[in-house]
Image 1 (cartoon, one colour):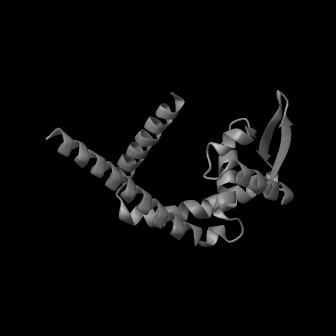
Image 2 (tube, helix red, strand yellow):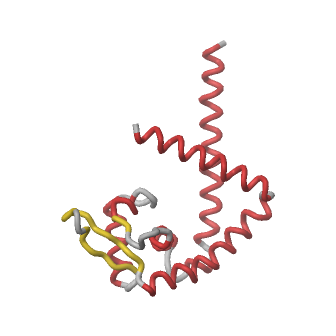
Length: 156
């Protein structure tokens, strides 16, 4: 009986993950095709958005890497492109020769805000009709719980 219960819980975890993953992919495909990302691709916007939420304004490249879904080398190239376009600035970390600090420029902050306003409306138009406010809160609670659990396991 225990083996059957174990198999059942493994299957349930796999089915839950599959459902979460497929929902995320479906939503992201719709959002990536939306007009908000005609000028800046979604992965570049993700960097601008993450930097916009940094209280000090500056964020280490390796910390940024913890928040985006790109490899370190891909992120470095993406940051170079954003810097060439005048959307971010880089500087060496004063306490670490190998470290790099990043910050939005005024133009980068303006682009992030402009895209962000449209992007949140696009998100609302997808999520709002599908889930009630209570369901949205519950989904957020559950995904935060999952992310925190995974983060706690990685820290060990």
